[in-house]
Structure formats: C-alpha cells, structure tokens
Length: 208
Image (cartoon, rainbow, N blue to C red; front, side, top):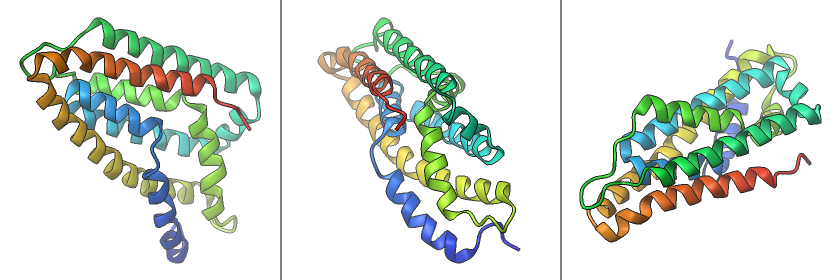
C-alpha cells in the first residue's frame, strides 16, 4: 500500500508547487549564492535548503517540531541564532568582494551546502509552515511518518526545481556581471544585502 493515497497526492502536488513558486527566504538565499558564487554554488545552496526541509519534515513527524513551536523559549532561541548566522554571512560577503573583470569567485560546494542547511534549520518559520501545511494531507488512519516523508520529498522536489531555476539564472547573470568592473564591485554588496534582508525578516517574525 502506498504511504499516501494517490488522490491526496494529486491534490498535494499543485498546492505544494504553488507554495514553491512563492518567493521566500529559500529562493532569496539561492539567488544570493548564485549571484555571488555562480551556478555551482546556487545548486549547492538549493540542495542544502532541500536537505534542511527534510530534516524539519522528519522532526515534525516525530513530534519534535510541535514541541519547539509550542515552547516560546526554544522558538526564540532558534530564531535569533538564525538572525545571527545570516548577519555573519552578510558580513562575510562584504569582506570577500568578488574579483573584477573576470568570473565570479567559485565557492566550495560543500561549504555552501552547509550554509544553506543551517539557514533552513535555524528558521523556525519553516517549522510552523510544515506543522500547518503537511497535516492537512495526512490520513491519521495510516502510518504518520511515511506520509510525512513522502509529502516532504514531493515538496522538496518542487523546491529543487523552482529554486534551482532561480539559482542557475542568477549564476549566469553573476558570471556576466563579473566581467564588468563596475558591476562586479556590487555583487558582494548585493549578496550581503540579501542576507541582511533575510536576517531582518527573521528578526521581525511573529509566532502567530
């Protein structure tokens, strides 16, 4: 027997894809990494975000996500750790400007993957989203964990496609802009601005 009823899955796919297409922190992070580090960095960020999402899905299925969401101290601790981490990424982008007149500076894929994973894991809004969205498509009469994991994989695949497209496009733009000395000087600042905006967005996040 399939973990999720096929009719439920057919209803979930367009709903999940619509949410994937909504600009958010994940998409903006892939955009920033693509501009700064090129297509390879964008895809590393994309897979890091997807991996973080699957961790959240698993924790939600095991009940840990609900525990964090209902305890303000845990929620706030994760939120401010996320803010601090994003601000650190913004400062790092400013301190490591891209070379001018060449190509974008390649970033180690594993490092970018880890950064994206941490950005996703330290965003409590993802926890709240998963707890609000996925249970609508879960049948309590079936095993819960396989359903959560199946829905999480489907949602992550949609995110990989959408965020990957954005990241690859940004990587191509970054490569072209890096050949211009004037634009290249601003790429690090643009990336820093994106990370700073994400930090501000997370700092202003309300639990309700």
